[in-house]
Amino acid sequence: MDYDLILGRYGEIALKSPQVRRRFESQLIHNIKSAFKTEVHVKGGRIFIYPADFEEALNRLAKIFGIVSFSPAIAMKTDKKVISTKLQEYVEKLNLEGLFDDKKSFAIRCKRTGTHDFTSQELAAYAGSIVTDKIGAPVNLTKPDIEIFLDVRGRKTYLFHEILPGPGGLPIGISGKVISLLSGGIDSAVATYLVMKRGCKIVALHFDTYPYTGKKNKIKIKKLVDKLKEYSQGVKFELLTVEYGEYLDYCMLEAPRNLTCILCKFGMYHIAEKIAKKIGALAIVDGNSIGQVASQTLYNILATRYNVKIPILSPLIGFDKVEIENLAKRIGTYEISILPNGKCTAAPTHPMTKIEPERLLKIKESLDLDLKLEEIMDKIRY
Image (cartoon, rainbow, N blue to C red):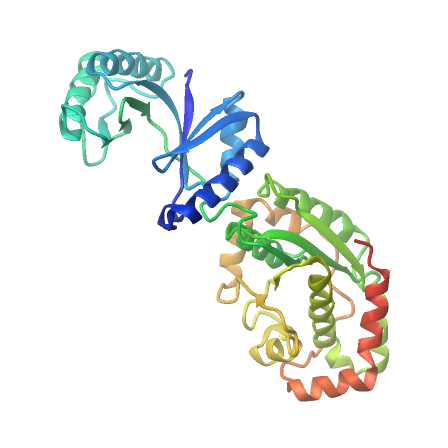
């Protein structure tokens, strides 16, 4: 099928005030143009996309936040004779491609904006008779095998039969910069994706805990970052790596063994906060889900975040593991996250599941962890 354009649609952007909506539309247009070569303009809540390569455009649009759905379409003048000719050509091509024949039922779905000498229902009935005469297919308005859409917008009409899903959400880059803790596991990648969906620019922060995790974890992180970058068209996706093995060495040597995971997470939040202040990030993102592991009990979530003065966002907080895994599979990070790398050997056999914030602060002071965290900060290269 030779299409003229792709019709894109957004959702909650339409609910914004005119001034805010224009800003969101401008960011969305920028992101689309960054993803592939195309002309783009927005009018009346529709995104009109004229790509150089339709196949590339359809693949990329499925990963551009802010787009709810999109349809490759034929454009024509809003005139019944023109619509009749174009519609006959369209269904004939569908027939030749094996998508439509006289055994398949169909329905015409017509939407109309503007002033015309016909109603939407009248145009749908008119178009239905044309299709029946051309193909001989029966009409079924309730549960058709194929739906054919006519989107009448003033003097132009757009014809299509597919509505392809986009990821929805807000255009990435519209909501500010965040630091996302990216471990290499399933949860943190999904959490990163979800805040990207709310328009956040990502600085991924990876704590390299070698030798307690394998060297291959760096390869895994690179692959995860490359996959997540596919959803960040138009906005730079950055990665910072912190060498964290020496900090774990110190905690395991000087603190009770069952506190290792708590001190590990505590240090991550406080380093992330320091980096956020340096680079202008507005929040920290983690993959916490209540009760999933020892460091994610409510008691330990409270303690490990204690005294962190910027927001910590946990988009997976109410998800169970199956829900997280299903989302990871859908966005393409699951197969990367499960690549073998071995469990963290620093994790104790019987980790503490409940610690009071005040006790954790006393342990921090007794170990002079602030000094250790500053030593780590000095080694970070931005």
